Amino acid sequence: MMWTRFEGLLTLCRMLIILSFAFFQIACSTANSLDTGERHTVSLTVVFMDEAQLQAKWTALSGKPAVMLSPRLVLETQKRTERVLGFYDYVNRTLYCPKMNFEVCGHELHHAVLGPFHYERY
Image 1: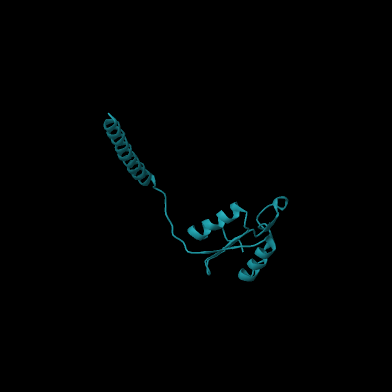
Image 2 (image 1 turned 135 degrees about the vertical axis):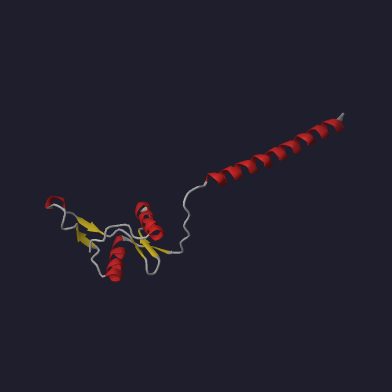
């Protein structure tokens, strides 16, 4: 009687192991087939800086001011001061952004992957 219980338990364990392997096999193959997004492999350096350091680095690399007035084509009442919050250096493949500003760092990461996509005003 003891032996039949042991055999039953052993059979149950084997079935559970086989079912779990089958489940993970199906789950993994389904996850791979659902992945239809674009893939980009980029090698870059990320440098975290505070605002003053970012603006000084921007001016040094670009030769342009880091704080500027919005474009001349905008109505006088809509003009505002704009400042560099982060940037991607295409030559050195380096992303400069504030450490905890995920919006700016993510935006610059898009530049690293997709290239320039802003209208160049200056």
